[in-house]
Image 1: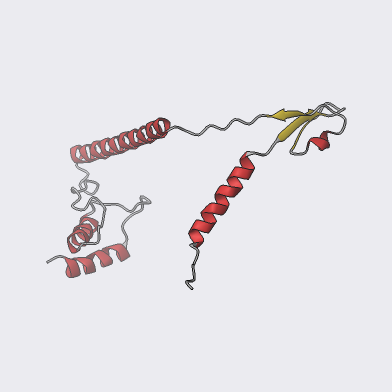
Image 2: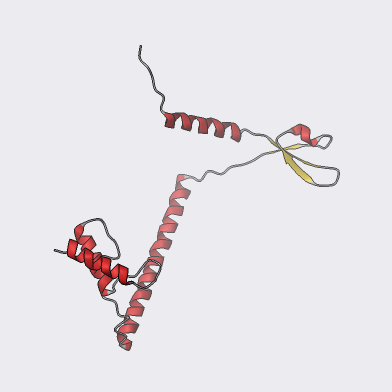
Length: 159
């Protein structure tokens, strides 16, 4: 005789679907009491002598078209934000170059501030940290600890 084991994930999904199906069929009643206050309940008997009316709840499930349109909208917003951010950085770089503010002129980034785990990207990021072409994500200054770590990474990963 063979023993069968149930998949706990499948059981959880089944219970969730069962709960959702029962919750979607709940009846809700609305009535106004003698003092003019509006009440809602799942029990028609709570209305006592008042006239209880069943409330119809309409749910809207977004269509695939609406979901796609929303995703495309936010992707376009993100693209525009990045474009504005790049424009601001380019304007700042140009302004610093024209005013002779050499300390503020950043060199082009080799890594784009990203590390994909490869030795080459770790090397590029470390060089970017030391030459000032990347900033901390919180906008703060690169400190001694970051510079020391970058110098160690250059020794380890740049060949």
